[in-house]
Amino acid sequence: MSIPHFRYIAPQTLEEAIGLLRMAKESGKRARVLAGGTDLMVQLRAHEITPDVVIDISGIKRLSRVDRMGNEIQIGPLVTHASLATLDLIREYAGVLSEAARTVGSPQIRNLGTLGGNIVNASPAADTIPALVILDARLALRGPEGERILPITDFFKGPYQTVIEKDELLTGVIIPLPSLNGRAVFLKLARRKAVAIARMNLACMLYYDRQKEIFEWVRLCVGSSTPKPVRMTQAEKVLVGNAYTDDVLQEAGRAAAEQMVALSGFRSSTAYKKPVVGDLVIRAVHLAVEKG
Ligand SMILES: Cc1cc2nc3c(=O)[nH]c(=O)nc-3n(C[C@H](O)[C@H](O)[C@H](O)COP(=O)(O)OP(=O)(O)OC[C@H]3O[C@@H](n4cnc5c(N)ncnc54)[C@H](O)[C@@H]3O)c2cc1C
Image (cartoon, rainbow, N blue to C red; front, side):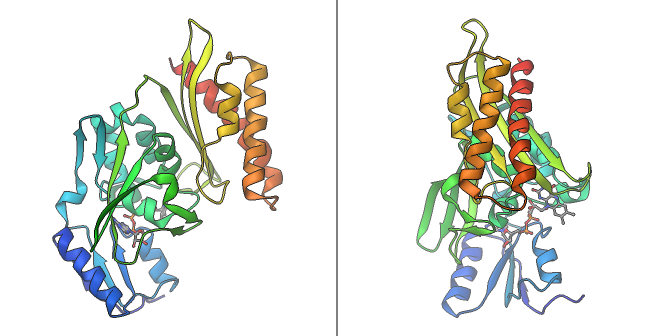
């Protein structure tokens, strides 16, 4: 199928890109940002979107940087999944994000697809989002009025819906360095092993004190299961302060399943997802504890 006609512009600076977005907004034109194009091209081909102008930001070099700044790492939105999977800085300080990026699509998709595109597309199945939620990531958005920074969980309104304004760009992902040496795991369930969108995914990070025999802290986030990405706080509460036993793990699995149903309501997929989310939580906690 042909793709709709649109004007294509490739600004080389952030200021130019934001100026173009502002002009499009003021003149009532539909503008779309293009990063790696792995989501956008599919949507254009399917005529799901029909923009007047496509603004290709892939040439804006400063959006591809990864920097450590004090107690944070700042990741540019154009950093690809392939880079997230291999860069030492990310592997060391945000290992769960590396693990998540490694599961995305195929080598071709990982070489083109970007972190920013994965976030702004806001698919419930996006693999980096649960990892970013448990890393307490914040997002920097920039528009004509300046910059605003918000927690990643405030960015999503629902499936494929976010709070980004028409004249704003996602310009950075900020991750605080973890204060404790936690162990992290990313799990993904899909219909097949390669080039598969997640039916469910889960990011888990925790610290189990082997001397005291208790979970000191736990963060869990399940993707593709709730209208917006959220921490599985009920399961986290069950684990924290308790020992690594079968009973505690089973109880945490039940709590996660109940929280998922409470948030998403009873749907046709619930009969499958409810037991599976519990099992995923148990498996992830088990793997994370066994890591260290
Ligand atoms: C075959 C295939 C397999 C895939 N497998 C997976 C998978 O396993 N896991 C997964 O999570 N995803 C998967 N995807 C989806 C896709 O590859 C990812 O979501 C990717 O990260 C999107 O990044 P991109 O740079 O290509 O985004 P684009 O397609 O360029 O953009 C996506 C959306 O984000 C907007 N956007 C992009 N960057 C910015 C920015 N900086 N500021 C504002 N708006 C912006 C665009 O306007 C567009 O609406 C797959 C896609 C395909 C085609």
